[in-house]
Length: 110
Image 1 (tube, helix red, strand yellow):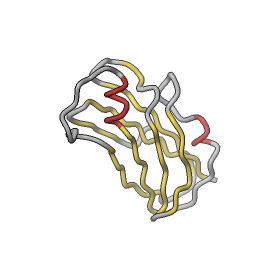
Image 2 (tube, helix red, strand yellow):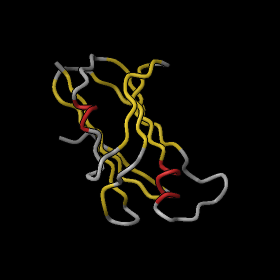
Image 3 (cartoon, helix red, strand yellow):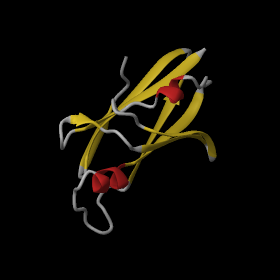
Image 4 (cartoon, helix red, strand yellow):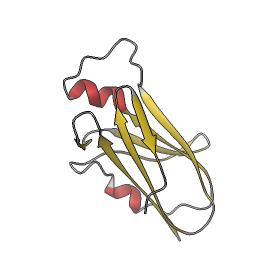
């Protein structure tokens, strides 16, 4: 069995990013849609069982930063971030996102 989780951290404000819309897709098929909680996580995503294959996590970051009171250019430098990643085996895959209006990073967490 393979599970998946994410954690979004707002590096501009130094806090978890609550209220970011998140989607998980496999190819063109949506598997999950949710919003990060106060801790920057989507707990319901962890309940989803995934199989080996290619996936995409999408994060609506421009909407989040606007709601946080930041003025963004139009169009924003980062609107939606798509992370394409692969699941090769069973276990837990944690895909954190550290984000600001002008950059982001990710890695396979524990």
